[in-house]
Length: 359
Image 1 (cartoon, one colour):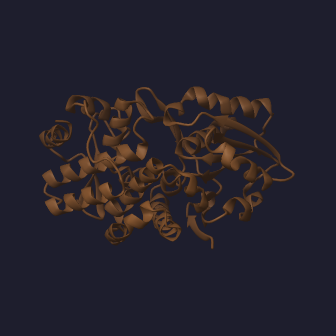
Image 2 (cartoon, rainbow, N blue to C red):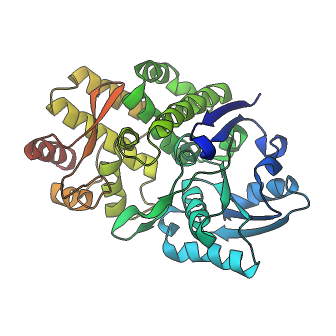
Image 3 (spheres, rainbow, N blue to C red):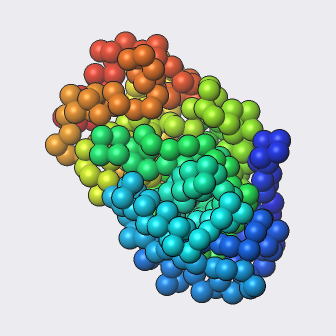
């Protein structure tokens, strides 16, 4: 059974379909404007699913570009391969790009669509749990720069998102856990009842129970759609979705993109955010312990990488997108289930948290 959510953005609204076997049951033609399609995938996902997708696109000029797999390839150089293919095959303004892959493929395809001929349509077909619950929804697109993650990009909403849960059966265990980090995030920032549900069902989610995964994906997308509908371009509320990300992006930049998966870095980052929230008097020790227990149950790291220093964290966090006029803002927790974006924290408390996680 397919479940449908709507991201309510006026004339930029679009559906999210969640269910089994969507490659063959979803009517993609409804979301394709012209008669040209470029499928963007990577060398891990394409051999598994690209032929199935092509069969769902009869009577359409269907071209493809296969990128190397990994966060380290989310670069301007790889983006050029997408532009090259579009130009070589003479794709026009009515073309539709289809992102078939995880968050890297989705972000890069979306940015290519936002910028090719000043904007063409695209469809998200996320194949990792992380991309199904987070990066494919909301229209954030972009690439990394050696000096900062996602610093080059655009807001560009897809025409539709197809989250086909059967593809999660081929997902490596680390990738599944990385996706669960973003699922946990929604409970921590927005929904204490969902957090309790996750605590009760984490073992089943790790074991890939399809019904539980479908429920987790649906609620995660529901929360994100609600937040994005209120704050499409991250003027305020939407920044809550970055819980753990400022710490996490510093870890990714320090370790080299791809060595720590995004969700793994976010998991450790959420633990650091919980620690700082406790130091500010917002969380109890029991709250911090609950957070740690849930992250560990999802097989996520709860400590910073060995060798990182507080000084390195501060340096890398200072180039985060949430820094405004030199002032670092962080997403912290007023309580479990209630996030807050704030720059009102004493630098010495942040220093204590960083020392505690790096010593």
